[in-house]
Length: 262
Image 1 (cartoon, rainbow, N blue to C red):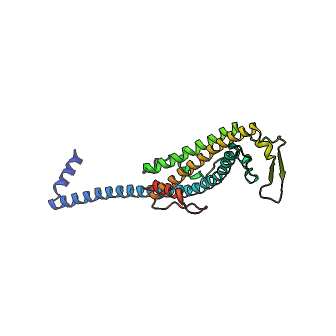
Image 2: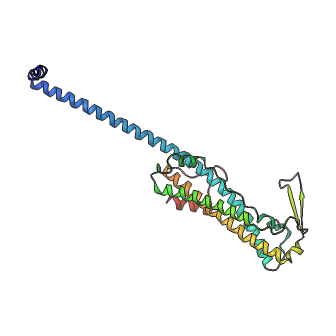
Image 3: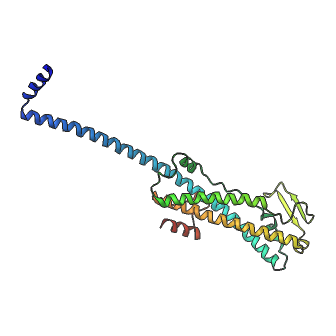
């Protein structure tokens, strides 16, 4: 009671102007606290925004490498597929293909794994996924590329398990050689006329060619997905997709890029 009485008497001695000053000081303290919280929150948002952009920049650079790698593989597979298609078409017409395209009988079994750089993507997926990317079109492009890459490699594994050799290694109409001074260490010679007249060889060649052309189409589609992903990530950063090797995008690849960023 004595303490309460003393406090009451002290308040009575405070004049009106002092109450005003006390109120202003209190408001100033409260405002300072609110401003400090707001600055802290602003700094946190700015720091998170910087981290997000840094991750997206790294993912964009990786996507440029992805385009370069899958485009290079697609071009190789496209060249093989064109030669194999010509070979099968000539054979199907009842003619024996010329010697300069008989390598097609061996390349129809080339089913390379597709392994573009993925470390930044995997790092992002391991630390919260793609939720930090606000643009849905960018997220969708990244998901589409990743999903199709998994599908294409899965198809490769399946086709390897059921692939047919048009000319088995123990076939006497095939002679393999070795040249240490050549980029292609292994050489092949075929007894063309006997093979062309063999219906079993023709059947195996047609089946293997049809399968290989499917694989080529997977490389084509995967390249389109890679370009779309690179284009959309780049557009969100106001940067242009520029593969680090293989030259700039041209032709249909350039059209795919332009369609992705419109």
